[in-house]
Image 1 (cartoon, helix red, strand yellow):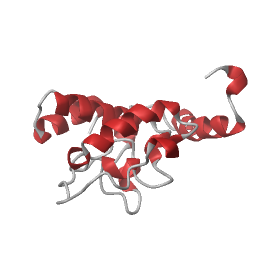
Image 2: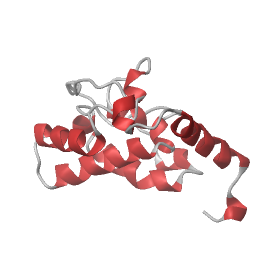
Image 3: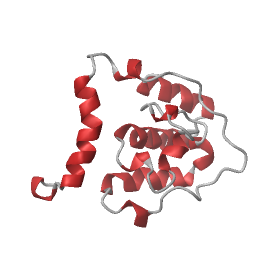
Length: 141
C-alpha cells in the first residue's frame, strides 16, 4: 500500500493495534496475553461462517489466510488464538477470528499468521497436537 492510498480508515485500524503496544510496559507480548488451553474442535464444524473473498474488500493481506482457513476449519477450530481475542465474549477458537462481518483476522496480523502456520503444518501432515505445540512455541502460549 502506498502512502497516498493510506486512508483514514487504514490509519485508525493501524493505530488501534499499535497504540496498546506502544503505551503498555515493555514486556513480551506473550506475557500480556492470558494463556489457556487449546479448544476441542466442535463436531461438524465447517467454514460456512468464514468470510468470503468478496467480504474482504480493502483487506488484501487477509485474502490468503482466509482462503487457507476455509479449507481446514476442523483443524483451525482446535487452536487457541494467541493475540488476546480468545478472552472476548463468544470467541471459541482461532476459527472464530475468521467468522462474521467483524472478523478480527481481517486486520490482525497475529490471527492471520496463526492461520497460515496452521495451514502449512496441516499440509505437512502434522497432527493437531503437533500443530498446537508449534503454535505455542511460535506465538508464546
